[in-house]
Amino acid sequence: MRLSVLQDKLARGLSIVSRAVDNRPTLPVLGNVLLATEDARLKLSATNLEMSITTWIGAKVEQEGAITLPAKTLADLVNNLSPERVDMTLDPATQTVKVQCGATTSNIKGIDASEFPAVPEGGDADVVVPGKVLKEMITQSVFAAAKEDNRPILTGVYTQFDGNVMTMAAADGYRLAVRTTEIEQHFGKPVDMVIPARTLNEVARIIGEDDDVVTITLPGDRDMVLFHMKNTDVASQLLEGRFPDFSAIIPRSYQTSTVMYTSDLLSACKRAEIFARDSAYSAKLYVKPAGAPGEPGIVTVAGISAERGDNQGMLDATVEGEPLNISFNIKYLIEVLNVIGSDRVVFESNGPANPGVIRPDGKDDFVSVIMPMSLNR
Image 1: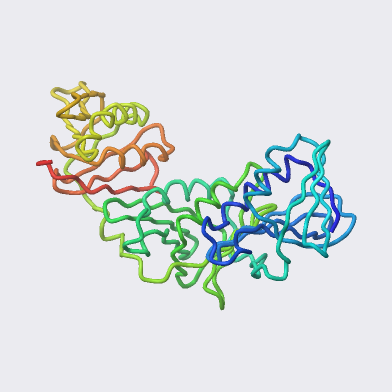
Image 2 (image 1 turned 135 degrees about the vertical axis):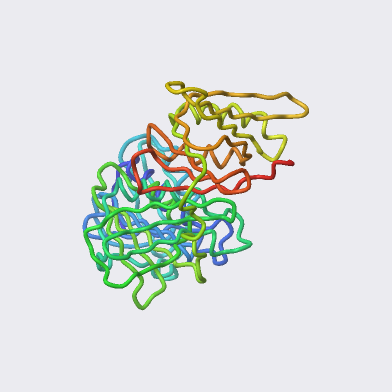
């Protein structure tokens, strides 16, 4: 194998695939990145046997070949090379790659490419989603997935195709986020799966401005889903198990409905969070309807620390219904407001012992539900 690539392209390619490398690989080759020449391009692949990422970069290939090299060593070296042409030459006898860039020469010992696991690529395009839309859907759902694997199914995002609607939902037992969009494909019968949140985070991170569409290959004989972008494929095993029926959690009516500017509420929550840290991030929301016609309602967000003090932020709001005094994990509110993507937000509740519902004002494609915290805390 003998080829030349540009340092910046190689560095970006390695940063994409390295996220699939296991920190503590069960096999030495799983700590490596596969480099293989393919149609005047260099293919880079990495896998942890649950998720694999493959990306292609432009290269001048003088001699075909393939090798696996230690992912961290290669990435650290390439990131510290000067921004110019990188020449790579494989010595098959020693499985060593000579890396030359400017006045720098390095030799990296690898493992034969034949020992690298087969990585899924390509496949039929069962679903086509605009890249910007898919990235937004992932961002607006994945934050609510469980971080701990006490219930492994909750560390994933439930994804369903039904009719011409695609749904992504995540829940961790304390909150729920659901995002829907219309797609061009039509499904006569619902198709659903649970995709690991880690995989979807990587897909969202990789989707770029030039990824007009992302094609999704749905599970066939294999229990696997594959996302294909312009120059990158991400394949992932699915999570086994039954995702909870989240539709039953979303309240259909409310006693109090409040409309606020998202930026105002987010700023108030961030200030309250500074003091709420000492009480397991429990902060209070006080909702007060207008006292007279023509006057605005008032929402107060309060964070209290017995040791450090307190903060109260008041903002004008349009309030319908009953007054409300409710406690939430303020971090959960902040995470929703960070991704809601709307100038104004609607907050609905049926009282202090019931979940709070957060939606973008004027849209019905996103909803988040947050369980309240005990008022006694």
